[in-house]
Length: 252
Image (tube, rainbow, N blue to C red):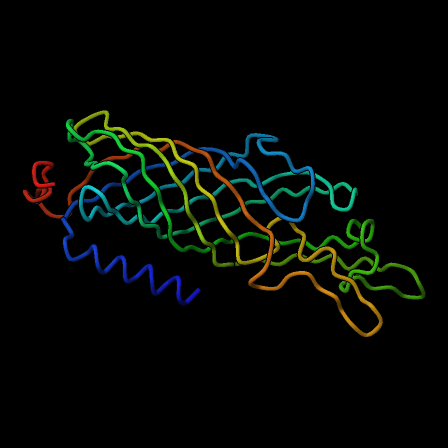
């Protein structure tokens, strides 16, 4: 994670040498497309899980920008674990800082370069609740290390905690200018979570073998991914009284 952050900061400092004083603000709305974790048969687009948010984007030039973005909304899915039914439903908050790289030259409001595909990548953090559900876990893994038995009888040991985990966000999209300062776009974003608790399944197939606990993942090896699909509306602002002349399309 430290190496990733170092590379990210190096890229930021490199492009900042040619920074221009322009920026955009925007709103984002869409749905969670899927959660890829420990469940089987968790098909995408099972239901419309509304997610929305906002972002601030600083434009270094017609190719590169930096976006601070916040998303919040519902995550819900259902499937199976070892043929046993499983589902979850929770609210997730997501904060990220992403570089945005345009495939074509693009400046919001400039008619000659009014559209472009783009990619994003960066670092982030997510916040969500995690619930341990002992009875449901015992259905498919009665030897799970967090289950407690007294005289051979399973004890209900449910608990809930809040999780804050680093994420690796990345995505791609297409944006288009529809006015002097207004633009629209469509975007698909993915998140890699450095936690295995998003789907309320934290190493669900771990088991106790005598005095040894056998596990299948740790903090750097887990299975949780999520995908967002949405649209965004962007409004161009200026940092300062007016746009820097060097930012005009004819200079790129």
